[in-house]
Image (cartoon, rainbow, N blue to C red; front, side, top):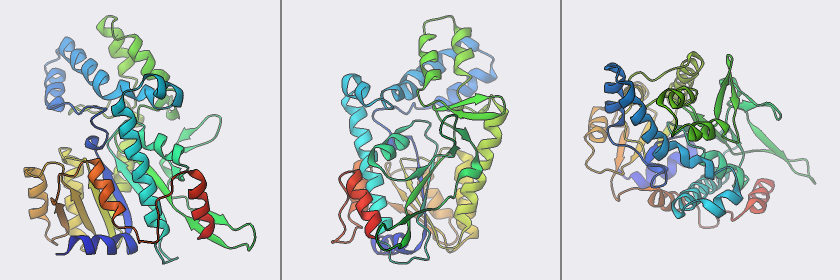
Length: 350
């Protein structure tokens, strides 16, 4: 199978989806080995001291770093080189995919791109906002944004100022399967915590007694890396609503899923992906292997009855190599825009 040729064809003619895991946000936000096993054991044994210890480590390594992202000035003054480098990789990724969608010739194809992610960080939102690429994060409202899964799948159109020509422009749907550090519960609603006030509250309680830290930590609207995933009914319902969207999008005819930085250790997502691949022969899944010896990857590829799960192992695909790969799919005459002005110009020219 000529994967490169088939991928170029998929980008030009398929319904495009991405599944992004924690490997993409590394090395800035660390992935903690065996955290699900350790946290599950602590919860099941009712060892609250050990549970709090693990959650503190998880918070410090995987969540706290998000505070550097919303403020450009804070990022310049305080953040590490790793933070800035990872954010630049996200920006390059979204600008490249935006350019690829713009070069598709068919006006019948939707310019929606679904970004499914188990990451709870806000790299995608910050990168998209700073590059000027249109995105939908599920929130509606300007002064008091409220989250609703029904807010997804909205199309965006641009009308020429001179000739009244109207054309659809790309929009990225950021679908966060495991919640987000920027989500906050208010009653039965999920509200936007754009200043990450809750993260700061948790940070301030790190040195307090364990009960106070746990009380604040458990307010996070994230799926915990343990078997006892949910503390909140609203998050539980939202999680399964988003998984249904994932399932429905992959069941569409000619759907393609690109998997980046995701190990498929999440059994639910792994089985769901395989089931859809086996029931929808027109779909195809490409896994950018960051671990070429992964037994999970190889088993997924072997268990696909329609031979439509493809493991890409030409290189060790970290985020930089993945960006190079997609940049190589651009037509020679198509350039990746450098800033917001060029993105707007590309939209107007289409």
